[in-house]
Structures are given as structure tokens and as C-alpha cells.
Amino acid sequence: MNSVSENLQIVHDKIARVACDYGRNPATVQLIAVSKQQPADKIMAALAAGQRAFGENRVQEAQQHWRDLKTTYPDLVLHLIGPLQTNKVREAVRLFDMIETVDRADLVRALAQEMKKQGRTIPCFVQVNTGAEEQKAGILPEDLSALLSLCRDEGLEISGLMCIPPVTEPPSLHFAFLRQLANAHHLANLSMGMTADFEKAVALGATYVRVGTALFGER
Image (cartoon, rainbow, N blue to C red; front, side, top):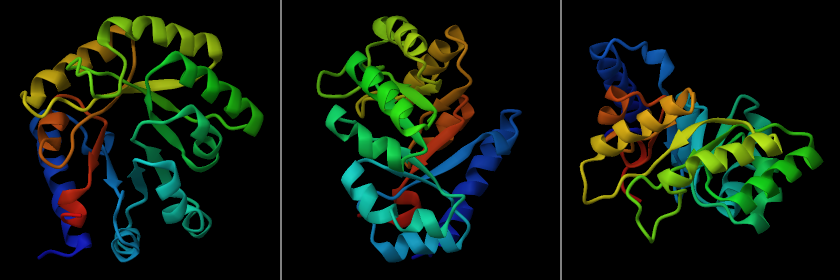
């Protein structure tokens, strides 16, 4: 079994290889280490290996993992990659450096208001439910324009789009679709691709890939 540092190198090498194959600069693809439900020793191993961008699904768990470490590692960048309830917005704005799961009007308004209160400007992504799955978070593609207009009206900085493809469909179809949506709305960043498909995502323009199992092993 490889160490976390070895796994990080393997994933970085794969990102670089695919990026170069498709005429991209590997530096334009950022690896987000998904640390949800991971023990402290594995997180510390990733930090020791130089990893500084991490993704968490839940605000409360992220507080347990990172509240003290953010002081120790001032260059740490935390991404919220799970659904955000409006009653957790205050804590999320205080802790996270990027929120990837904006998907509805009440959340847009709550985030904009809380950022003003705290004096923080946090880049956000809109999560798009590209497969129109009833059980999954994310705005439907046909409602994206209206939500982006609301974000602009509220002063919420949207830097890109995020998706989680249906497990029963080829992910590349959804990655290509998300890229089309981002291009249509002049958004530069795409958060897409996980352990099983991040190489496909890089080939189709991902600027952020969210990888957990390939780095830390099975939870």
C-alpha cells in the first residue's frame, strides 16, 4: 500500500500527463484533496507532503478537522464540496475559502448577507445537476441563467461551475456539458472529476478535481 505522499505524486503525475496530452498547462489544474471522514494522521501526512487545498462535505466535520490547523497552515485553502444548509452559512463563511455548492436562491442571499457581515469575499461555484437527478443537489441547467443573475445582483462572486455526474452514465458527457454551460456564461473554472474519473475531467477542461480515495484509501 502506498503512502499518502506517494499517492499524491501519482495523482499529480496523472493530472500532468493528461493535461499535456490535451495541450494544457498542468498548473491550471488544482488538486483538491477530499478529506471528509479521514483520520487526522492521513490529513497530517498530506499536509507534510505539501498539499494545501482540501475539500470537506460537512461544516461541522470541517471545523473539527481544520479550525486549529488553519492557524498553523496560513496558506491552507478549504473548499466546501457538500450541500450547505442556510443555518450553517455563518460557520461556513467563517471557515471556508471557497464554496462549491451554491444551488438555490435562498442560499445565494444568505451567503451574500453573511459575507458582508464578516467582511469576507469568498469565491463560489454554482453546482449544476447535469443529470436532473431528483435525489441530488444542484440547480437544473435550465435554471442556471436566473440563478447567476441573482448572484450578480447580490454581489456574490461566482468563479465557475461544479457537477457530480450520475453514476449510471458516462461522466465525460456531463463534463462536456458543464464546460459548454461555463463557456456560455463566461465562467473560467470547472470543478469536476473524482477518483474514478478525474483524468477524463482534466481532458475536458477541469480546473479543479476533487480526489479522496486515490489519495487516502478507502474510508
